[in-house]
Length: 482
Image 1 (cartoon, rainbow, N blue to C red):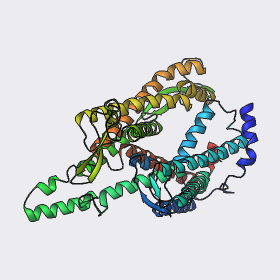
Image 2 (image 1 turned 90 degrees about the vertical axis):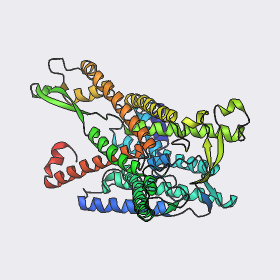
Image 3 (image 1 turned 180 degrees about the horizontal axis):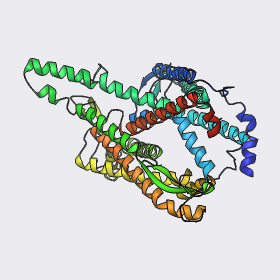
Image 4 (image 1 turned 120 degrees about the horizontal axis):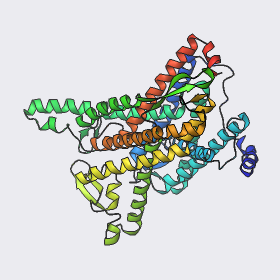
């Protein structure tokens, strides 16, 4: 009961949390589309509005573009923190609730409101610490020490706006969730820039593959040589034709496996054993395990980089060189860069290093697959997706195995082999796709592509459901949606 007293004790603080009220009556699909568009517009404005008082951005090797895409953050802008605080707070609170560390009844409207407000409070606290960490690691550099606090306040302000936008969309004013919307915008923008952006980078090369291809065709025609065309086939750390083709092929494959289902034969007890089939997605869990994987790799890299920068910046210690060794090299394309030594552990935790080798590719793929499978099993057991949890839900719904007694225990034994196999398969596929996406130069990254396809399918399903409910309003009452 102490946990419940805690959530009740902090209720006076929770009432101070900024919130968006739920609509008094159902909002039409057209109005929800308008509110969703407005939320997207505000988020885009945040992501292009630079932080006042910064001298430079993206100056720290600790800045991870992959994590930035996943968390829909834009370096040096009001969207610096993106949805990171919301996601981290949501995961923490979900684990606390499902592991029963907090005595909270999510079926009780009062407890649900307290829990939501507490999650929001945790997100704001995380935003405070994350903003301070970004400033202290020079991912964003303030123009002067006195302006550092102003920059921190702006990052916190941007995070609170994003939290409120997510609150607005999720409470019925918009479609889906704000988190999905902002991730979708982040990934689509990254893919659009990789495909069409006509700006020069490095040694005067065009960033977007389409402008680069047009320039290559022109140069090949004027010089009567194939070299310009071959140069855009695979451009290391820049969008290339291999990346474009890989994006299309992997995107199609992800959509295919995301729509695949394994149907388990069951029966409805209350209808005389009427036979039904219960669908389980082949990608039983994919998003959160691969996000955990990417975040874990980034955290390990940051830790190893800290060891190098603090204790071995000149690579003078042979023992520490085996852990973290980084050297400065000059390149014709990108100028002076920091490159991890291939004999160092940090090399294998660097996402697509400039000196990529076949050994790196093998280790990167195996590491992503292994971590993704481990996190898939952990998430299934912690988030209420295990065979036992599914069995309890099915028994409550009146489902049973044909020919067996309707009990959660027998149903769990029957489901266990399905759930374990699907957990392993989805973790393996998610890790493989993410790693291949990194190596092949997929636009928006392999992880981003998984998220993109899942969110598009989610929005398509929501749109079809909303159209059905508008055409047949009585369905909401029958299905218990209202």
